[in-house]
Length: 328
Image 1 (cartoon, rainbow, N blue to C red):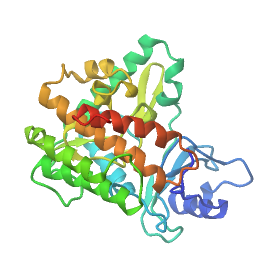
Image 2: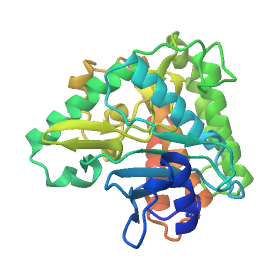
Image 3: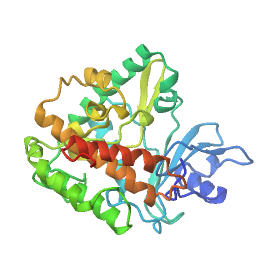
């Protein structure tokens, strides 16, 4: 996926990064030692073969001159913190961090190295899998997500703060940040921004049912799941984690919007039954939040085609209708 947030670097800079991380003896020579992993949407990621033949992945944060959405500020630091939490407090398979550099000395952004995971991306191969195998993997993803959500936080909102004492405060702030981002860049979302704010306010009482902050990934789609031999080998891309309501996790999205796929296998693995009326309302608010981002980020990413924008605009109409505001 092409995006102006991808901070590509020259081979000479990449070699300097490798030397700092692994030592001069591991700097590769010749050609063919680096290739870009193209399915990411935000950071640039390179697959690199070191001089001893070991393969690693290098992720580089966006350049500071490129404006990102408010919730994406400090995304790489969030990912590093989340990886540390998950490795210390769960059995969920996530990458090790070989080396991280936030000095901005070799390039204009943070970066880190991790081992290359020799596995298939579930988002890419999903349509080729037999239904039973796909469902089994989604059940595993549900179980892994539940374990991630078992980590309790001290506040709602960003991992590093500033925190909120209630989930209503945190989620309202998160959504308002997205709306302000859209207004700042003049993004046509197909609705008056204040109408969206009014819909959120009408249903915000449902958020008060959530009283305990839990670690949530939010962005844990099939495209961030690496699989091999019928098992989840690794979960990647943890840069959008925060403390909130587990029901906001990606696997629950399809309970309200069928365009996001059948949630049944995920929910079986998670161990979550049918949603209550209040849970459905919350989940619809989370759908609204998601599709607002999907519409607005197309401007921030500099998309050159309208495919995502057009698709997400339809989903935004659907989310508004679910919350009592059908398109007239």
